[in-house]
Amino acid sequence: MGDNTNSFDASPLLPDRHPQQDFFVCDIFDAAPKGDMAAMEHPIFSIATKPDMKARQYEHGKNFVRVAPSELGLATVHDRDVLIYCISQLIAAQNLEQPVSQVLRFKAYDLLVATNRGTDGRGYEQLRAAFKRLQGTQIETNITTDSEEQLDIFSMIDRVKIIRQTREGRMQEVEVRLSDWVFNAIRAKEVLTLHRDYFRLRKPLERRLYEIARKHCGQQAKWVISLTKLHQKCGSNSTEREFRRLVRNIIDEDVQHGHMPDYALSMADDTITFTNRRTEARSGLRLSVQANSSREPVIAPETFAKARKAAPGYDVQVLFRDWVTFWREKGSPALKSPDAAFLGFCQKRPALR
Image (cartoon, rainbow, N blue to C red; front, side):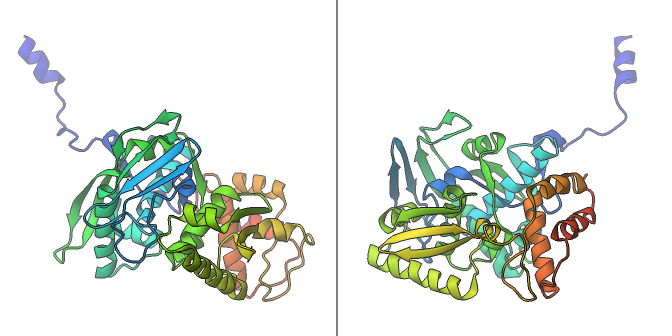
């Protein structure tokens, strides 16, 4: 009778060979770019334009970071795009109260598009190399994430598995297991939102400067650092004299084009000042927007609260930047009510499920 009972209770369905709880599928629409604060604070990623084979150590107070390259060199600031994509997806899922996992599965194409990379064969080759450097670069540190101190040697990602690839050898689906260190930072939400134009910055040093400004200047009006200290925080292999020249070139280009997201840079007597563009705009008139002006509209703080209700699940700061881009593409027309225009833009966003 026991056999009959087992037969009766057995499900006619095939077993679930890929249970959802084993990994997290990256499929959240327009997830806001997020970076972990520890990597913004410390020079973990190389800003060299050629393979960086030099091990490094950085100390700040009681904290230290030792980074050792693989045979392909240190993981680079551009390789960090992989982590930003993964962190962004998991944080967006947490905000929607969805279960997350240390293992993520995603389409390589989606990552390339989200991080403003090319989707041709070279784009896939560069992504494969980024996976290898991220997995091969070893880090030893006592920096805590989610109050957990790591004194062992680890990599930013523990494993990469290509699930499917085309006949041409291009990867389609990828599975990545994040390190405990990165996942702890995600669970504790020790992350900051990045401007989408971060992925449009060409020079590795530009990206590193933006990361440092985002971490240290944040919402402040200004933040000041010495050139020597900035040189260390960037993890630059160049001499201080060459580093000064490189920073000066970026400042000159930003003065001409205003291309650095969120923060403007200036230098005087080997002191670098980061100025928050948004705070600077708010310190002027409430709104003084003319056609083709480079100054963006200013939105009242209470409007952002209304925007969260109008577009639940979205990062309203990212929506604001998307709206400003849309406004500029329309020729920067004069606005009677920037707040109302922004809320109308938010209300047209598709619902996140």
